[in-house]
Length: 279
Image 1 (cartoon, rainbow, N blue to C red):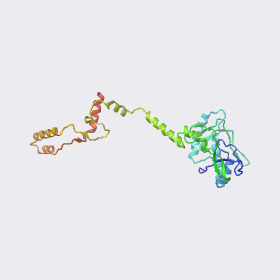
Image 2 (cartoon, helix red, strand yellow):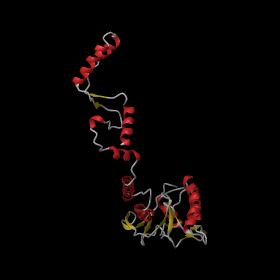
Image 3 (cartoon, one colour):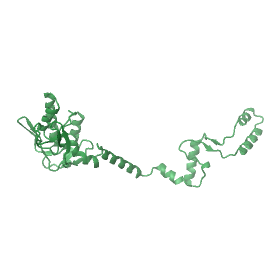
Image 4 (cartoon, helix red, strand yellow):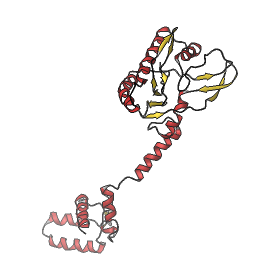
């Protein structure tokens, strides 16, 4: 049943479809059955399934006497989620569960649903918020059987205002842009992390870039020794180990590097942070 996409067409000259009894919000099953018969062909079993599903959703939509809207929403939320998870589908309560009162009834094989509650409140199937459904002007569509434009009422028209300004899971581009803007604003206004606070506290302490490791990962740093200083160091230690062939050879093969990656970067970084925090 989830494949149904039924629009409410209001055309005084078109006798094919009956005028809906309750077209705000939604429409009655007599209209839905006539629409399905004219535009969607299904068998008798699926008609029974259609009526059974409508009864299940309508029973949940009824607000009992002396019950507040919040109490009603809390009572029906879990069984409503179970219905949707089980693949149940309502033609009338297509995108949200409209609040109602009274009882549904069959008259000459026509099903009349409970009356719309005066509050015009509903529960959105996407964000599960209590929302107010206000009437909107129907849009014009081209009716091919009459070859002219007629008024068309769709359930998604009722939800447009909610999707644009309130829903956490909107189905409109305007609503999606709103969610992105809110997320970005929250990201910009988030409190600074400890790492950011530590970095800001140490950033401008006068230490030259050649003497500190600024990266979060190991990288090349400039050698504090000049080439002349390195040559003097190597000559000195070659003389000291002139009688030790292994040590002397290891010193001789060493070459000067203007930039190098320190092998003890992690310990050096920890030591640097400790010193700078003490300051």
